[in-house]
Image (cartoon, rainbow, N blue to C red; front, side, top):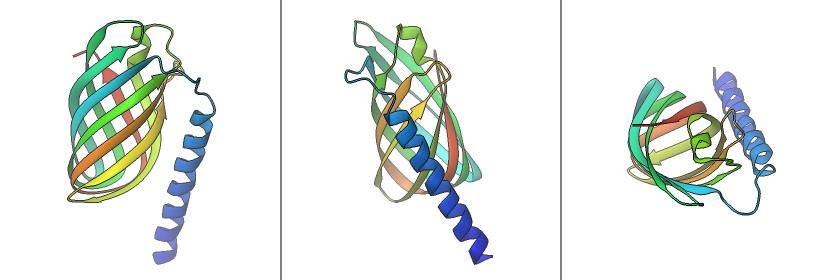
Length: 148
């Protein structure tokens, strides 16, 4: 049983590293905008998250956003405040969609997370997040950014 668990951990870490390297290579030098949001996340095996925030387009305009997501391999409850740089935008509408990222994290009462995620339009978001609560996350997750 321990060998299977260790294999799953190694597999998840490898997937997260490959995803981060692949998306980091696609990024131009200047961000096309910035996101800021706050979400609450709860999970026992499969986790869900929901929240809201703003998207500031570099060429002008600030737009409210709704954020929701699913994490596989999540246990715990946490509140996350995230900010991120957005790349590969042709227009502000490109921010909306489903973003995928591999992640591995542990937070006991507080912690810092960073991840890179990408949507089907090629938009890449580099996120930095502060997390409060007790949470273990081991797996692939997705985040949906939509209009409120």
